[in-house]
Amino acid sequence: MIVDVATYRDGSRRDVTDLTGALRRCADPAATGTAPAQEFLWLGLKDPTAEEFSGIAQALGLHRLAVDDAVTGHQRPKIETYGHTVFVVLKVLEYFDDTSRVETGELMVFVGDRFVVTVRRGEAGALTGVRQAVEADPRRLERGPRGVLHAVMEHVVAGYTAIDAELEQDVEEMEERVFSPDRSSDAERIYSLKREVLEVRRGAFPLVAPLTRLVGADGTEEVHPLDDQARFVLRDVLDNLVRTVEHVESYDRLLTDILNAHLAQVSVRQNDDARKISAWAAIAAVPTLVAGIYGMNFEHMPELSWRFGYPLCLLLMAGICVGLHRQFKRSGWL
Image 1 (tube, rainbow, N blue to C red):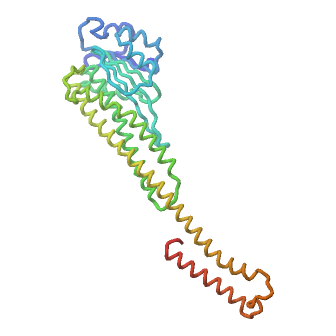
Image 2 (image 1 turned 120 degrees about the horizontal axis):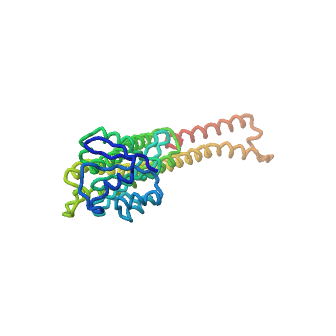
Image 3 (image 1 turned 45 degrees about the vertical axis):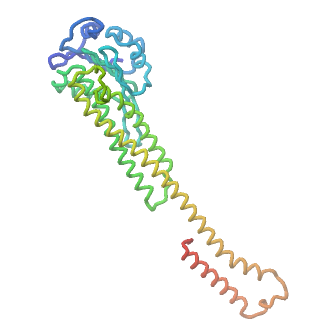
């Protein structure tokens, strides 16, 4: 399904009425032999089928392997170069505050000299706001498809950064809750939060290495498909991405420590409960023992005929119970 399509020239948008003609005009120079021009095409698709995408791929000369990845989806975040075309796979993350859950979508971007094709899979990752921001910024339009790529990647990584802030708050709240005096069963919540942190890490971490190579920050001398200006502006995106990944990894380690602390607290509380039960059982055993002795109904028990035998037994049981209670209290069992 085509979400939006337009060509851009001289800093302004032109709606496309003839997609076939627009594809032919803005085809990759490596495939058509035409000279580059200021005009470029931005085509946005959502969940296209192989049949729907085949004509577009053929017109723009997209590589078959990249097309297969875009159609089938479920790809690891990566950046690959096919001639003059850069193929980028991004995981788009969306945080739902009411459930503290992270939903994942997928975004593929084909960037040529005179075209950008964005393929979105899933509900997350709508690029309407990105397109509007680019159209409102003539400087980005002047940079052509490379400016669009920067805007898209900046938008995706900004989503990671926003989720990073939400996760930081969730982890802090969980830490306070675990170490509060109130007893609560938080193991399931901690594990669920670890799963959300892992979801963010799966989306962000694999993108670090290919983006580092793309902007030339790995120190290699390989030929880069982007010009110096595009690589320079993407370095800021890389910095934000690395910072987010470092934070997310620290959250995972901290949640592991919180979970271990919670389990240790549960074990200590169980031991405390067991000691309290044992202490009260020992206190209750004293009157049970005395009452059992004098309930044996033997005739020749001297205390049975004694006038003060009954009150003395009561005082004896009460005294021993009070003494045991104080001793257990002093030792911390009660």
